Image 1 (spheres, helix red, strand yellow):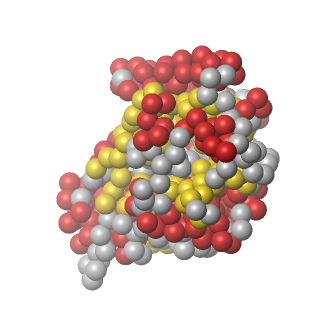
Image 2 (cartoon, one colour):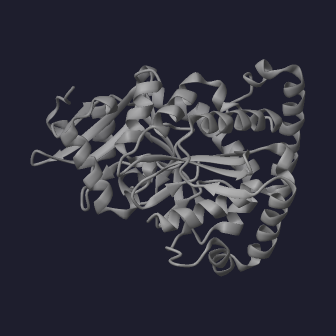
Length: 381
C-alpha cells in the first residue's frame, strides 16, 4: 500500500515477508554502508521471520529518494494505530536502517505508517529524528573481536581474558575428567540440539520466575525458522558445548557478516558447577572471531558475565515516538510507569537482588505445580 499525501509520497508500506528481491538487496546495501546497522536483528530476514510467525501485524516502511529505496523501518502495527519496533521483547537492536546522509521527519513517518505511537526499547543511538522521543538510554555491552590467527583457544583466552583464563581452563579440564572429553561445536546443525536448548531455557525461565518465552508457539516457530536461514546478512547459529556425547550448554543467536548477537543461552543445571554459560560465551567469542565476526553484541542488561567479557558499551534508547492522538497519550500513561519501575529495580542492586529472590521463590512454586503454571508468568523483557 502507498501513502497518499504529498509529504508522504516517498514512503511505501510493505509486508516484510513479501519484500521483493530488489528491496531486500537495497536493505542489505544500507546495512553494509553504515556500521551502526550491521546488527542481524536489523536485517530483513529477521523482520520476515517475525512477519511470518507472529500473526500478520509486521510491516516495513520504505523511504525513497528520487525513486530509489534508501531507508527501511520494520515495525508491528496493533489495534488503534499502536505500533512497536519489530520483535519488541525479543530483538536487542532496533532502528530505521538507512543509507548515509538520509534523514526523515518522525511525524510524517508515523502518519505514513498509520501509527499514533511507536514503542522501542533497544533503539540505535544514531537515530537522531527519534531523539526527542527517547525517555532513557542504557548500556549495551559488546565484545570487539579479532581473528586469533594461528593461536589455539587456550592461547587466545590467556591473551584476551588473562583474569578468567586460569579458572576457566581449570573448569574445562575438570569437566573433561569428570564427565567426558570437552568439545565445542560453533555451528551445530542438529535440530535436536536446538530443541534441547529451548527445553533448558524454558526450565530456567520457570525456575527464576520469568515468563517462559518458549511456551509461546510463535516464538518457538520463529527460532526454528531462523535456525534454517543461511544468508550473508543473517545466519542462525547454534553452538553447543559437549562433554563426550553429553550436551552441557547451548546458545542460539543470529549473525550478520560482521556482528554476532548473543541471544538464548542455557545449560544443563546439573553441571552448573563448571560455569557452562561462561565457557559457552568465551568459546563463541573465539570461534566467531575466527569466522570473520568483528563484534559480539551481548544486549542490554546488567549481568556479571557481561561485565567480565565486554570491551566497551554501546548505548540504546527506550521510549515512544508519538503523534498528537488520544491513543498515544493513553498508551504512554499506561506503559511508561511500568517501564520506569522496571528500570529502577534493575538499576539498583539493593532492589534487584530481593526482586530476583522473590521471582525465584515464585518460580519454584510454579515449577512444583507443573509446567502449565509456568505459562501464567508475567511478561519479562
